[in-house]
Image (cartoon, rainbow, N blue to C red; front, side, top):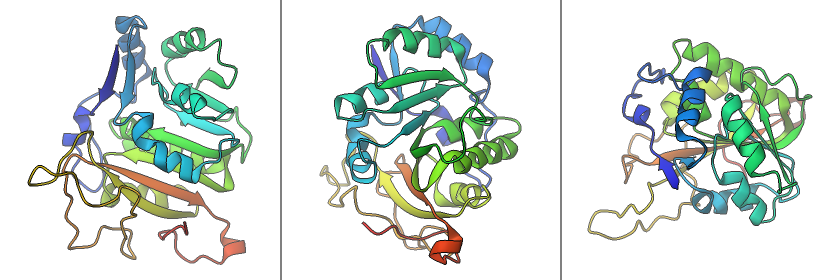
Length: 263
């Protein structure tokens, strides 16, 4: 059985801090219990499956890149990426239960590796180890911890440490720029950020028609990293994708870390 997650927490995060205390999504025990209950019989994709994200991944991430997927769970994401030509993917998750399940399930796929790890401490990896880090709901999970600001800071600090200069942190989240850009700015890393909005699967605009806007059309941000005042979100349950390019300020001479990546 294959499921797609729309986080219950998305309807609870509406303030600028982005904190939510309804579910223990940042707790290892919660996930271990959940995966034990499921018994390895289902796959659970957070927000969107690979097919919906493929245009972005193919555009920004070369197939030969070393890639890290954080908070992988039992998603089909990395398996689908291998089928699409990606050949060097490490998947990590805080739950040893799901890592054991996925290691057994994907033992025949040499392009994939699964490791139990807390994203707040990825000291196993050397600095600048990856060209791309994909986060599909993991930062959102940490924002449901009682110590959400600290947990988010620790994770993003580690992300910025292990991603290569020029590499991409691809964040898929329900958090709008008012909630997510401040977190990214506080990570100790300089990013160039480009924002995309991905409607929920099957969404149709008013009048029963699909949106006329291309999902590959970036959304301009203000100098403060916010949505323009006149911006209208067609689908209120859309997800936000932040393409964050790690930059070397001393080389590029960048004075701010919100901007547009040239396509």
